[in-house]
Image (tube, rainbow, N blue to C red):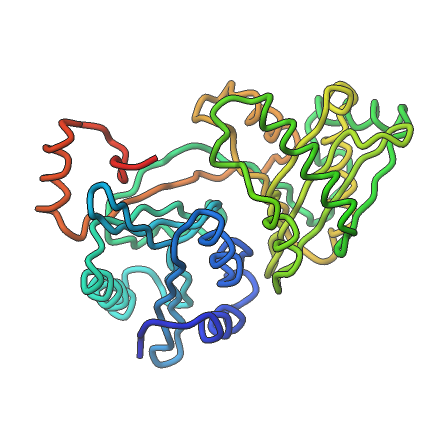
Length: 331
């Protein structure tokens, strides 16, 4: 039977999934935190149908200006988690029940970012599109030579500079404050990064979740030059937030950091998923960096399902737009 779930029931379903189906971005507590940070409402829907598990989750957002309600994945990835084979009758019926429930709440449209490693765009009942390529570090028999030649050079450069790594799963408030200062400084240097800015509570709240949360820091001569936050669940560790200063970038401190984290967690996780670049351009600098570090490449799909076609097309007409953005009426 499938129905609306509360946080407790959704978490129980998540924990009952096989390890390879679990991912920190889908954990109900993470979904709730991301909803809070974006001023949205978290929702969960699913249950057990015979021996199979179905878990839908997302962020419900009401836009007062247009009197619309939509649902989208949390920052990171989303979509259906299930033990059922895509395309089976139970799989199809699960989507039908989910759509009926969303329609009962007046949802106009859904926007979904599917996980590249889970490939959970397969069987989706809306339209899907390849957005870009993402990179991952395989931890099976991991070693320095798992990196590309450019990344290896940077790692050796950081080692020569006597870079030091600190990895904490329970960092002090002082360490979190130092991370947030460096992170915000870096976001201020980059344009178009508004969606990656967070309020003060967010960094502390990440470490209060049931999932694994890790702060890794690189120091050179006592100076914090690079830092990253990872979140983990099941067999996957996700590269969640990262920053560095000019000195750190010059020394390849983040390459060194990722190498050390891979060594530290190679017996706990199967993969570190790095994500992709800031665009679909293969020459995107962030993608080039990640591709040199993580040689396992996967396609990242996005998708959309219009629940109220008449209302959706009317709003497009009213705004006189032909954009391909699925949720086109808000930032």
